[in-house]
Length: 280
Ligand code: SAM
Image (cartoon, rainbow, N blue to C red; front, top):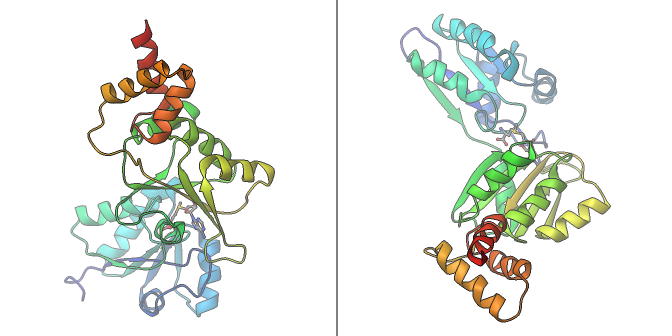
C-alpha cells in the first residue's frame, strides 16, 4: 500500500463518547502505524488503554500545528506511517487536521481516511429534521455582531443547518436564531453516545426557555430547520406582504415577525429596515 519509501498519513475516526464506537480497521491501524498524532493525548490515551494500543504519540493541536506538523512530515518522509486522531470523531472536521492534510498533499504524501463517528451527522439523523440536504456550519462566531451577521447570511438557506456550540453560548445562540431566522424547529443534541445523551426538540424559543431554566452541560450539536420559504421570494414580495398585513391592522413589528416567521428567507432585522425605509 505504500508509495515508494515514504509513509502514509491515516485519518482515523475515533469515538465521540462511547469508546466502543471505533472500527476494527481503526484499531488495527492505530496499533500498526509508527506514530499517532493526537489532538488531545489524554483522551487518546484512554482510548488506547481500552483497546490495547501501545503506539507512541505526539501532540498535534491548533496551538502547535506548524511545529508538530513539521515533525510528522519528517517521519512520513523518512518512510514511517502516521495516524492522525482528533479529540473525537473524524479528524479534519472543526479541528486542525485539514492543515496536516494540506501539508502532506503539497509534498505528495498519500493521505487515507478511515471513516467512523462524527458528532454533526449523528445529531442530524436523530434530529427529526430533513436530512436530504444539509449544511454543516461548524462553530458560529463567538461575538454577537459577527454571529448575527453569519446567521443573516443563512436566513434564506433551505437546507437543514448543523452547528457545533458550547453550553456557555447556546442560550444566546438560540435567542439570535429566533430573532434572525425566526422561531424555527430545532434539535439540540447533547452528550451523544454517552451516559447522559439527550436530544431536546422543539421550536427555538421553547428549547431556549427550557435550557434557561435548567442549563445544559457537556458537548452540544444544534440542528436547525432550513428556511421553508419557496425559492424565488424576493425582498419586494416579502415587503409587499408586510405592507398588506399593516393595512390589515398589524403593528409594524408584528407584520415583520409574521412574514419572517413564515420564512420570507429574509432576516427580521433586514425586513424591518426595509419596511421602515418604505414607510419614510
Ligand atoms: N471532529 C469532530 C467530529 O467529527 O465530530 C468534532 C470536533 S469539534 C472540535 C468538537 C465539537 O463537536 C464539540 O464542541 C461539540 O460541539 C461536538 N461534539 C463532539 N462530541 C459530541 C457529543 N458526544 N455529543 C454532542 N456533541 C459533540
